Image 1: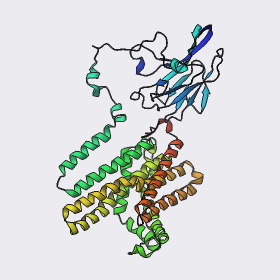
Image 2 (image 1 turned 90 degrees about the horizontal axis):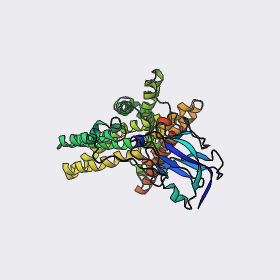
Image 3 (image 1 turned 60 degrees about the vertical axis):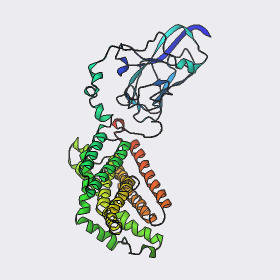
Image 4 (image 1 turned 90 degrees about the vertical axis):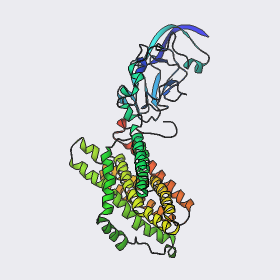
Length: 457
């Protein structure tokens, strides 16, 4: 059905990105009875290349018709769909929805693709009965950009020359390089089981931490994170550990009897709360507090890189501290004990195998164990920095909660595996909830990245 009338045809014009590299331009028509979703998901009406625009969420923003009046100069609104990097309208981050005016610039993410909202006035127009069919059609006379078959550039033949910073920022180059390094080291230490255990344990710990780092989405210098892990290891190897043991297991009721079956579960939980929860979580929190103190004493930009200024900083440093704690505890205590005990009964080969079987779950389990407790407490330390008037209440709640989860894990480990799974899942959920809330509270969230491994982004 067609008709003739003065009509303003609205559209979005993509004005940034490589899609205009060959002299063509992308325009996306807007229809008064159909919303247009912009994102990387193939189901969107405006689909952006997933490799070119990693800052764009799968369903990033939507342009909705405000009314069906054909005489209205501006009858569309732009809404952000809870995107990871935000939607900007004329340089200002969009909160909720806002009406569009001709010439408005829409940017997906802080430095992502940019669209201009425009319209033209036509005297003749066609109303298509199926709006869904109309949204899939390109503008009249549109020809997609093509390259001649014989056109092959130098950078296409040697892509490594042109990738630049994207090679390290978007291609996960560093994890791949470290994997190669660890593999070569394992080949070089064949026949040395202790060296193999250190290499395997370090690699698994790096992989577990990298997972948390990607979820947090804030860049922190690697040497600061490594420093937090090493500081925890130094504390555990220093006489300061004896002082903590004297306080929490000597003065306070944190010492465990040799026969744990002789006491009730409640008493066991209380002893673990003091002797494992309060003591170990305080030890792992010391590097976070040290980073905060150092950050307070230096100038920008070192202050922001080293210090603790928000919950994400606390989570990153707390989980890094937990990596150091887990590695030393596993490689220096649990694995050697199991290896020696099994070797005495069944030989060296069986002992080494038993040690490796213990090593892998203990390191991987740190995501729902030590890293979960320390990261959760780190969230509260960073939150206390953001909310200084309530800092002591915030720190107390975080310290007691993290210590309680730690004690519950240790105590249920003496009962059965099912309860241990429940506590592990609960601890992991606490950490993930803290990461999500920290990302929402982050003062630098406009510049952060955030990876979602499952579901729409």
